Length: 139
Image 1 (cartoon, rainbow, N blue to C red):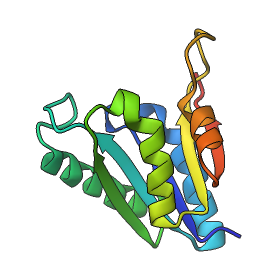
Image 2 (image 1 turned 45 degrees about the vertical axis):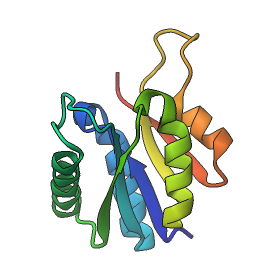
Image 3 (image 1 turned 90 degrees about the vertical axis):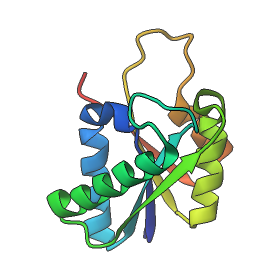
């Protein structure tokens, strides 16, 4: 059913993504699908990495670790650099899903604490032609 699963990850909050990462891995093993972990960063130094190159290296290590820990055979990483991730995130993820040829996007989400804040997952589902699975964390 699924051949390529895209998993957006925020390397600054990996501890909150365990359920989404587990679901993506389970689906990948079940369907023998490729998993591409996508991370979005800016060209400016940030809390995760000082440069886009360092960010790409960290994302690649993250993908390799996920493959080993979660027993996924076919993984890749795709670091994306945009001017302002807070503004461009949803459009960038939708375009990346198209570019990758992903047929499913699995992403983590938190339970909203304030209902006036928009949901990246919901907005991505509205922008994208892909199936989008939003997995809430435990908290």
